[in-house]
Length: 331
Image (cartoon, rainbow, N blue to C red; front, side, top):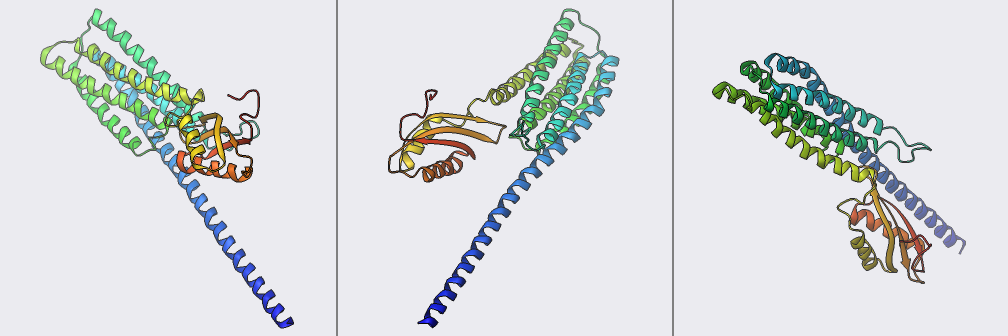
């Protein structure tokens, strides 16, 4: 009998050891997977930051050349594009700085860190685009009222060189994370430069073949209109995040019906709010009314898991109760 007890005790110890080993293995595996994901996210940000820095250097280096060429040739299209490139250089530098600031860790005063700084940079870049477009339109109207002579030859060569620089910058940024508003803002600035160079080339060719100098300000207005449209989209998207609007792809009513219909014990979902820190980090709070026999901690876990797996909301605060609402501010 003592021998049997000893064998059973040894078996129990062996089973406990195996379970602990498996548990440790699983925990290590999960931890490694988490680290791998974090490293991938950091690598993506580092790559985007580097690409924006290179684009800023290319834009800044050519800006002075184009401005001087515009003054010599008397071309508004070139000077407008140089002014846009100046704005772009400042905006690309701000975007690059935004990535660096966003890497700072959270602290007691900024519990989510500086992740939203890149969204603020994108919003500022959108406003800068509007200012540049407004300046181009104003100058173009003045040129239409009082046409000036344009040296089409130098204008053509300088605009062609600018087009090459803009294509290089666009190619550098094309491989960055385009879901990031900061990257989108940088791409819009460079795309505006690219269209500006194309407009200057077209204007130079028209002037060389027909002598019609009004082509220069008219094509400049076309470029400004393209810039304005892109700027409005960027401002609207960045402003929506800064005002803590619900992510556009999330429907809170659908999420409530989904949770109540697929998690046993959940009667209804209300007092739900959703917003985002940046383009990727989604946040949500909600109140769940559950049945009397449901396990509160289990329900909370299942709600959070479904929000992450089905709706992409990785950070949620869930309040539970057996009444319709937990407080007078519910709504």
